[in-house]
Structures are given as C-alpha cells and as structure tokens.
Image (cartoon, rainbow, N blue to C red; front, side, top):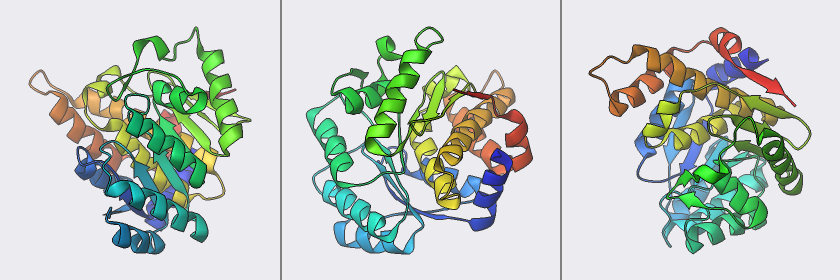
Amino acid sequence: MFEEIFENVRQKYPLIHNITNYVTVNDCANMLLACGGSPIMADELEDAVEITAICGGLNINIGTLNRRTIPAMFAAGKRANELGHPVVLDPVGAGASTLRTETALGLLKEVKFAVIRGNISEIKTLALGSGTTKGVDADAADRVTEENMEGAVALAKDFSQRTGAVIAVTGAIDIVTDGERAFCIRNGRPEMSAITGTGCQLSALTAAFVTANPDQPLEAAAAAVCAMGLCGEIAYQRLTELDGNSSYRNYIIDAMYRLTPAELERGAKYEVR
C-alpha cells in the first residue's frame, strides 16, 4: 500500500506551495525535493493566490506569523479549495499565544483542510480549546504513551469527524486518522526532537504525498509519517561520535532522497485501530 503511494509521489513530481516559517523554509524545500516533489514559496498576498493556482497542493505553517502573511494564508487556502487542491495545516505553537491560536482556529473555520498535522498539545488546543505547549513543542503532560493511547486516538478521531480532515498527531507514537480508522505509527527516533523543523518538513512532505494520492488522504498521510520516521532511523545509523543535530538533519534529508518505495513498505511500523 505505502509502496504505491510513494511511487506516485516519485512519478507525479507534485508542485507544492508552502506558506511556511522562515526558521525551516530551506529544510522544507529540500525535503520536498528529496521525496520527489517540487517546492515553491510565496507569502505576499497577491503572489500567494496566483502561485496557489499553478500548484497541486498547499502547505500552511503558522510557525512565524505576522500580520502581512496571515491574509495570504486565508486567501491561498480559499483559492486552493476553489480549485480542489489539498491543503495541509501545521498549527505550530497553537496554544502558546493568542495570535497563533486565533489564527489557527480562524483558518479551520474558513478553509477546508485535507490534513491537519501537529503535536498532541497543538491538536488538543484546536480540538478542545485548551492545552499547553512548551514554546512550539508538546507539553510533557500531553504526550501520547502506550497508557493513554486509547484516549488520544479517540480525541483525534472526534476532531477528524468534526473537521472533515485527516488528523496527524505526531510524537513518540504517531496517530493518523480519518475519524474511522487510525494508524498508530512507531517509526522514528527520539533524537529527531533535537532538530529544529522535523515537524515542518513532515508537513511539507505530507502535502506532497496527499497531492500525489488525492483519493487516499488517510493512507497518504500515514505513509508520509512513516517515511519521515523511517528516515530518522536510517539517518541515526550514520551518526558518528563527532556528529550532532546539524549532521543528523542533513542525514535525514539524504535518507529521504535515497529511500525507495519498497524500503518504505518494508520499514513502516504501524497498526490500525
């Protein structure tokens, strides 16, 4: 299943418009190129709407919000909806500030999203109107564990049913659901949290996978999450005692570039609930 999904990405070379944060924009571009997609970035209002029209998918990331780019997010999202293009939302830091939370909630009201991807604290904030974050990271009290997995799956399924979007909750254990089925994914390494932007890269990656597989948004999003985690595992094996998080970041991108659809199929670790 994941093999075919990844093959579609490699073959279709989806062009993804990213309105994303300036901390990780270069890494997102390189991750898209590595997976077989093509990136373009435009956040000026007039430019963003026009660029969205020529792209296959849109990735909106609120990591470094400002009053200039927020209108572009809304306008590009609505244009993508008009064209039937999938839109991914990464609500970075929702719950950490009023502007982030209100912007994310406003986007949910006015734009239809194919996938909403965030950590458990961000998803809880949007789903329940409450939750805490440590900057842009999940609060330790929120983290998904084997003990609270059932409740986290139920939360994500309910949120998916209410929004109509696939919900991807990422962390030590990932949950990807369309409200009916939930992929519980155990790929990845804890060291990935020491790299700025792995979540941002994953959201861009998810947009490419969903754009290349428009009829399978759940499976496409789950495949993207598995692929990112698997690349984290492969990259970790390359680390030497002289390597740190900067090398690890580059190795993850390299691993995605080298990953084959068959390797993803073999290496994906998940169960469906």
